[in-house]
Amino acid sequence: MSKIPTDLRYSKDHEWVRIVQDAALVGITDYAQDSLGEIVFVELPPVDEAYAADEEIANIESVKAASAIYNPIAGTVSAVNDELDGSPELINEDCYKHYLYQLKDFNKADVEALLDAKGYEEFLRTL
Image 1: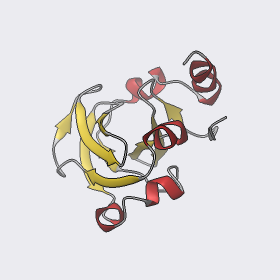
Image 2 (image 1 turned 180 degrees about the horizontal axis):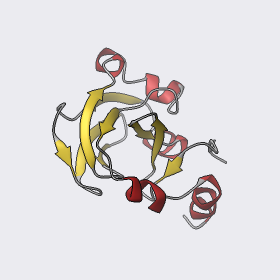
Image 3 (image 1 turned 45 degrees about the vertical axis):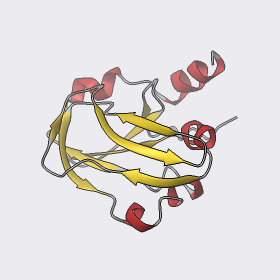
Image 4 (image 1 turned 180 degrees about the vertical axis):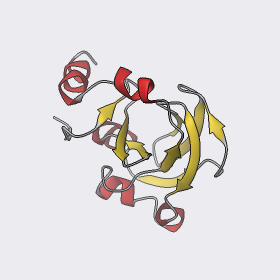
């Protein structure tokens, strides 16, 4: 079974959201990185761009496939994780430590609508 930290919120597209003060960090779940396999490239969104919830925002390429990342909550990109630029495999090493991007002015109602850890675990059982 995948690791599912209880302090995060989850989308059914396998992204996680961590709220840190007035920012929302977004990354992919353990289930997603495990399904993708060895990650070789990450295309991150431009800073200061606003995205709606469920809008395609980034791409991850692995040795198996390329996968679009859908923004789980509406907001404006305030930062991206530059560490992933030369080292995309960091996501495989610890997908909960290595977020993809950070949002500001995000929609708090979108966060509340995401699954909690228990809900996400139950969702994974249906796959």
